[in-house]
Image (cartoon, rainbow, N blue to C red; front, side, top):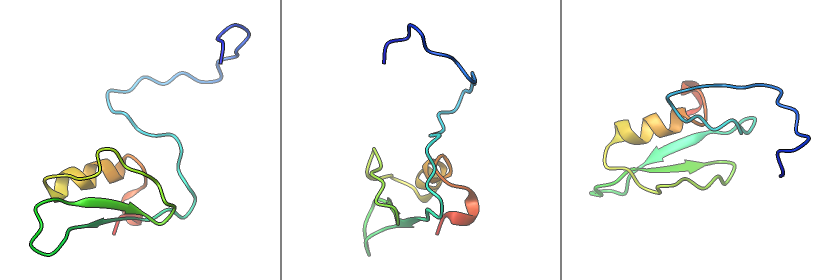
Length: 74
């Protein structure tokens, strides 16, 4: 989209990248294969996550919080 003629409605500065697109009712599940080393995020709305795997549960949880509130993480 060319910037010329665009109207800026809101400007936000943040040290943390948070995705503005949130799906109503989206639930993100954090899972791991039995005996597996990595954790994965899965969305009931078919969202694709990059990267696709995380070394710790905490890392996966922090990324999930960028997409949905705590109560929608399983």
